[in-house]
Length: 107
Image (cartoon, rainbow, N blue to C red; front, side):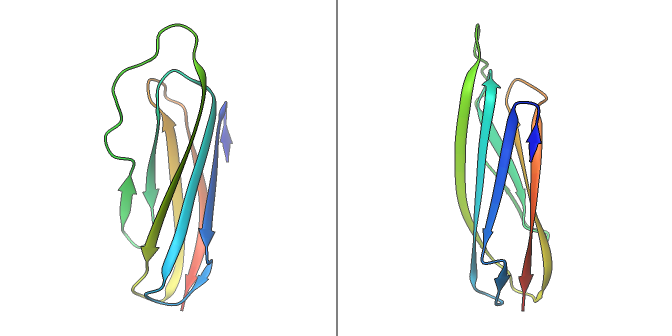
């Protein structure tokens, strides 16, 4: 998903998983113009969420620069069903954000 100069890619593997088996999730982000750092919020679709943790509250002065970041996570689903994984990435010091989604089917 792309929003302005921010691009987010969400990869989930496997997309067809058995209950209790680890699902690998990768969130990759690239910002063309980032006056701050990149952060994320991830919803696994089963009521569980996670985030990038504290993001420094400082902003870069002068010319901004491109930024790139990849987060690798995993999750285990305890109940069969269809889950919508949603990753939102933001650039600190701006209101720029983008969201990518992927489905996981657990049996």
